[in-house]
Length: 407
Ligand SMILES: CC(=O)SCCNC(=O)CCNC(=O)[C@H](O)C(C)(C)COP(=O)(O)OP(=O)(O)OC[C@H]1O[C@@H](n2cnc3c(N)ncnc32)[C@H](O)[C@@H]1OP(=O)(O)O
Image (tube, rainbow, N blue to C red; front, side, top):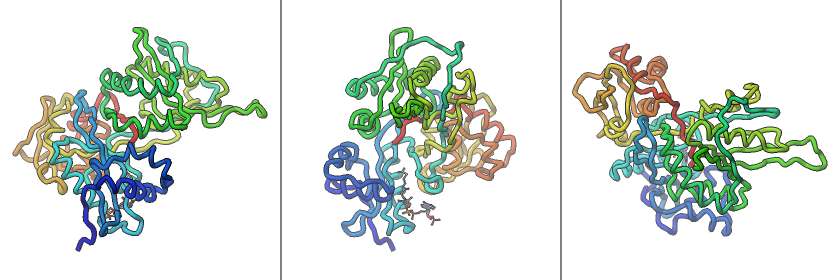
């Protein structure tokens, strides 16, 4: 018997559900003053709550955006954020009910993909989400110098906070249009106040550096702050630069931003989080060992909501087609067989070469995982063992996928 109900939240339920989320995440519950700041990024729209009577006991939300998929197409995506269940209601099926309702809502609205950043890796696979991109944290210790041969084709300037709030959203749009790497997310108007503006404007202490290319067009930016300023009492002590968001339309912009960050005076260490696995900083340095990977982990978790549309929208490598057999318990309309080949993907009645679940399909979809790895790990099964090698070529992408937009 279900002793709670799931439904969209009302305007009046925004603050109690936000409080519930903050408590579930062990974060500070907002005061009246800070609620005014957060309220704009906690709309009632697209949020589902679980209620025991009138009390909220669980919450999930999302905002509408687009994700870049291999080949450059952008697919409608529900970016899921703010999932939490009250501590005295966990492990009673609350989040399962919320996830089911949310996925059905995405499907009913014609959303093709769903995506999230997971607090724990054990939660979302059962709902068909798979770890589709990875990222690493990088720590560069001074003295670190960029090689003379590295691209040097632009200039870097610092923005003030008002310029940063106005200019960076447009610049980010230009970057993902020019460099449509799989996994990148569009950042809708709803995203900016919650993440970017809070960091750069409301006392977050972040500064923004913009790279301008040789053609005079801005083509990259980095959001960073000084964590520990050098003290005049202790002249040997150096600051740490904490880089949160670094995007460039081409390798020269990325190199130029790293050169800038590594040139700031009185800095001993530069730490950049959520960087692509193939971030070039190590090879840009005269001494690559100055750059350490301090963490490597899953980043974007993806869920194919409309499997036929998602499979059709991406491009594939050159290999003989494979037939995937998918069983999707949450969204049964997706269950079926799909031929995937260099000419595209379509439903088929042909027998499956590879049998998989939505989580494994999501892991393959952006090109991060190889089918042979998943086969060897027992994450998919094969009736034709050579099919996994063909799927490797079909699904793997030239550039590793990466998201870089935290939500
Ligand atoms: C996108 C984001 O917002 S990520 C943030 C997610 N939120 C948090 O981490 C906040 C703290 N945690 C919570 O609020 C809750 O524990 C949640 C949301 C993770 C899970 O909610 P619950 O209502 O307990 O999940 P539910 O009861 O539906 O569990 C479904 C299944 O997942 C398993 N499960 C759920 N959460 C976890 C977990 N953290 N660790 C291990 N197993 C878990 C359950 O055991 C259950 O397994 P079963 O189907 O084999 O019985």
